[in-house]
Length: 514
Image (cartoon, rainbow, N blue to C red; front, top):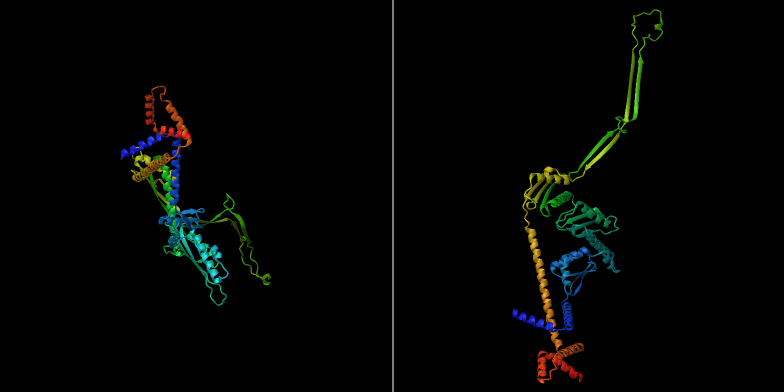
């Protein structure tokens, strides 16, 4: 096999070396044009024709449909900035049926469709039903745009307006079914937002008449689910804080020990209890004074002096026959009393302090460092203390809550990833080499075929003139000075044996000139 290949290679080299520059250029250009023509013909005959599957899609529906087409193994193309999807010709009906079973596309009947379908033969009831159906689809499409919601359906129950006075009026209701994305849950605020959206879009529906249920069968609008919402939100907050602490400390330590040589795990204890404290304070309005402003003042004084006893009232006491008693000669008594009441005006300060839930009570951090990144393979006690101090200074954590250890890291996973990547690169290089060899071989085959076809055709006039001048130069090299005919004859025979094609072409030219 190798001998045959070498023989063919030698023949091709000999053939190529015998060609002049002009023929080489023409042969190369011709081979290149043939390859391009064959490639274009092959592409045209084997190309896939596409037809429109859906158009005027939302970007979210377009993404869901293309993901499903990839799962089905069907090629697709998009147009109109991603709102139009095309599939290979002949697959349209099959794909539409399959996607319909999956509930795609999710954007259904719209207000525009309802208006376009309106006709003069349509009854008022039919018009209301179409508009109600369009409103349901519009609300479902809007709810689906909320982050974490994969799909939604809305069902409205709006009673007909009637003129019967005695008939008891019914309240309109709405039910919303939502399918959550994997790993997502709805917060209390989002549930309230959906209820307000539906109640605001339909004036007949009250907020309390909107029910929301998820794909697991939970009634999200029930009062008992409020604690569940709060718990999920608390877990999210706690997880986000732990992740931020881990990333911050890891990036900080990797500057010292190198990328991938540090691992950090933290545990955060949080208090989500809400606390409200009411405080009433009184203080003087003037700074530096212990007394307030006088609002009112009441002052009372009493003064009394007692004199000697007098006679009995009447004329009898003035008669001469009065018995004289011995009377004491005491001093007159006196009484004095004073009181003063002052009311001061003070500043009254009422404070209501509400402690926000979610305060951090304690944080514990465990740090693991790769032994290979350490000079001695182990950290000393002083080095560990220095790292703990750095972590405390960077994050404000208590030094007792930081633990630093060293261990040997297993990096087999990154190595295996590099191995797979290198193998993929080598496979790509081999594929490029094979394609290059195939291209050269194909060019050689087409070049050989083209040469043998051109060999039987007439030479171009320029080639003939060029060859003629060359042949004359070669003939002039023959020694014609000798007078011996045998010597001339022998030289001509040698030239004919050596250049038979040149001699034949020369004779053909002479015959054409005659």
